[in-house]
Amino acid sequence: MTATIIDGKAFAAGLRERIGELASEFEQKAGRKAGLAVVLVGDDAASQVYVRSKGKATLAANMESFTHLLPGDTTQEDLLALVETLNADPLVDGILVQLPLPKHLDEQAVVDRIVPNKDVDGLTPVSTGQLALGLPGLVPCTPLGSLMLLKDQLGDLSGMDAVVIGRSILVGKPMAQLLLDANATVTIAHSRTKNLPEVVGRADIVVAAVGRAEMVKAEWLKEGATVIDVGINRLAPEPGAEKGRLVGDVDFAGASERASAITPVPGGVGPMTIAVLLRNTLVAAHRNAGLTPPEGL
Ligand code: GUN
Figure 1 (cartoon, protein in one colour):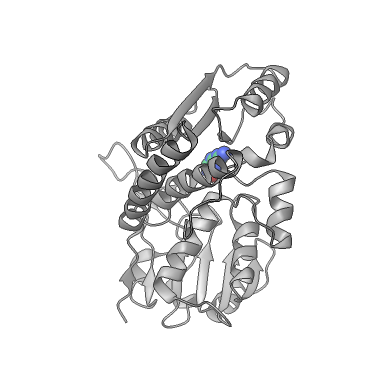
Figure 2 (cartoon, rainbow, N blue to C red):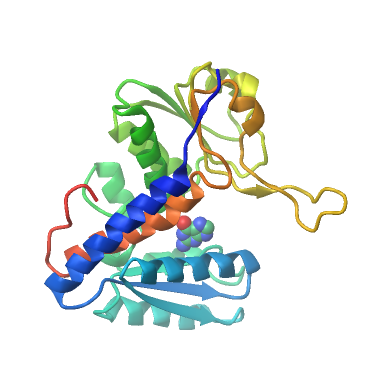
């Protein structure tokens, strides 16, 4: 079997275009643009790239972008004070504090300070609880983007066997909740799972979110499975090359001979994360302005 390569980049581009149109309609109705504030502490190179691309994508979608770049030695107190300021700012609909934060800062305490109606990352205890209870709220971007790709590929997920590998707050746990809400039968596998190949071998849907290069082997997969690869790992450079290749958590070359569909790295799940961040910001903006979010967002 040769797998369909799921084009997350094209899907995300379509979603961003639609969000841009809806953001213009929001501006007409609300008399202001939807706004996203992104906070970066320190000078981590990868985080700087992410934050810059989030800012650009926000502006391209007809929304306002507020970027706050703070020095690496920012205190917990100063960071919490900025979050409070953004909580109270009527032009800010969404607040994203780029993770990871420098070691001396308490990440959970910072996230917990974000008001739930601006929690576009879906990481506060209120958002997490809303997802668990099936209440409307804001859902973490990467899992929601992954679910969109799965539904686009497979339609109704009812009764399918899904295995999520990884149990992080950002991806694994919310991904499992979303699949459960979509009526899949869900297993969460992790570093202590016994006989992972056998567990993966039962799955119609495999979501890999462990952060270990190519650890999911092609021969583990059930023939015809659909594979969502959330990992982004950089391999050591080949001799003479400056940078190593980016690969996912799945052995892509082998898996694409065995799965029925698979997301590539890069160009699969990655582009969906920013598109869903914009979607969450626009949903939050509608609610914050007392408007109903548009259907199908
Ligand atoms: N760092 C890597 N991914 C993410 C994300 O989705 N949200 C935040 N806040 N930080 C991240």
